[in-house]
Image (cartoon, rainbow, N blue to C red; front, side, top):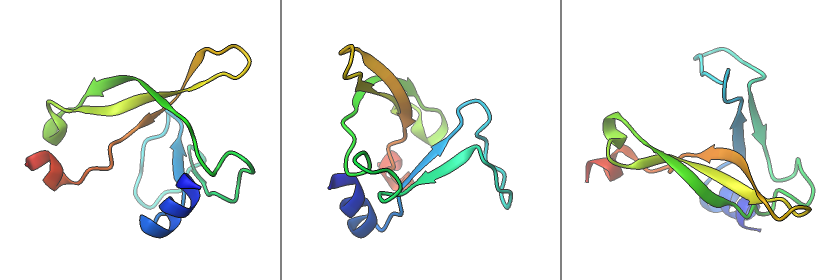
Length: 100
């Protein structure tokens, strides 16, 4: 139950945030259907864990210059055995991590 219990209790998180890649910009104080929150109890059988494979990454800029972030993640298509790109994943590291 890696995603559910660990994210909810140890990390004090509520779930995963999913945003539209093309139009998912953030505007403070404004709600949008381009960002969705997925909690462990929303999706039966999927929310307990996700087996993802990093298949690519981009070099960051600013404080992340010289670091790979974000990462492009994929899952295996059970029918074809092929990798299907799924999402970008940020590191979650603090500003202090990048300074050290």
